[in-house]
Length: 325
View 1 (cartoon, helix red, strand yellow):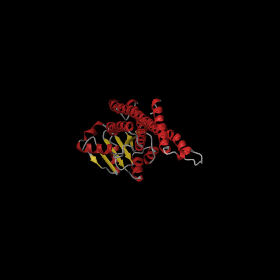
View 2 (cartoon, rainbow, N blue to C red; view 1 turned 180 degrees about the vertical axis):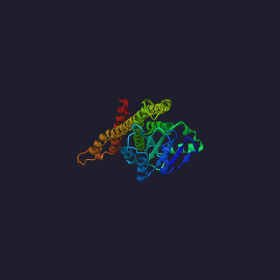
View 3 (cartoon, rainbow, N blue to C red; view 1 turned 60 degrees about the horizontal axis):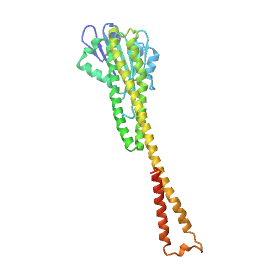
View 4 (spheres, rainbow, N blue to C red; view 1 turned 135 degrees about the vertical axis):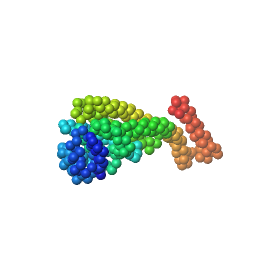
C-alpha cells in the first residue's frame, strides 16, 4: 500500500497522489511531500524509489532485503538514507522482535518504507495528521523527527516491564528456585540483548543527525534530534543496568540451586552414613553359623535393636556437635 500527502505552497493539501502527481510535487521546492510505502510490492518499490525519486540502487536493495540491516545514516548529498528499528507490537516480553523502517529525507520530501504490515509509529503520525495537519508546516526534517521520536518512546515501557519482571523473579528465586525461572531469566536476557543490539547503533544515528552539518536538517531543528539522542543514551544505560540485574538473578538462581543440592546431598550422606554400620551389624547378625550364642538367646533380637538405635542416635549427636546438621 502507498499512502502520500502533499502540502503545496499554495492551495489545499492533497492525499494519495498518483505517480504523476508525486513527480509534479517534487518540483515544488517549498512544499512538503510525504510518501509512505507500507508492505509494498517489488514493483511499487522500484517505481517510487527508482523511477520517480531516483534513489541509489543500494538503498533500494536495502529496502527490499528481508534480513537484518543495522541502523545507519548515509548521506547521498541530495538526500539522507536512514535505517532505524521499531519494536513489533503485541510481542511477549521474553520474545521481542523488531521491524525495520527505511527513511529517505530530502529538502522538501520524506519517503518511508517498511515491509511489515503495520508500523505503529507511522500509523500514529498519520492519525495525528488527520486531526491536525500543522505538523506538516514544520518541514520534512521535523516530520522525520516525529517518527523517530515515537519509535524511541516505545522502548522505555518495555524496559520498565522487564525491570518489574526481574524484581518478581528475584524474590521467587530466593524463596524457591524452579526450572521455569531459569528459562524465563534467559529469555529476558535474550530480549535485553536484542534491544541493546538496536539501541547502540541507533544512538549513533541520532548523534550524527543532531551534530553533523547535514543540509537536510536545519540547524534550528538539530536540538530536537539531540533530544532523541539523549533518550537513547538513557535507554542504553537503563538496559545495561537491567542486563546486570538479570546476570545477578541468574547467579542467585545457580547459587540457590547449588545450595539446595548441597543440602540434599548432605542429608542423603548422613542417612547413608547412619545406615552403614547398621547394615554391617545386620549382615553379621544374619550370618548362619552353628556356633553363634546370640542366635538362641531369648533377648538377642531386642538387644540388636538397642544397638541399632544407640548407634543411630550417637551418630546424629556427633553430626550435630560438629555442626553438620
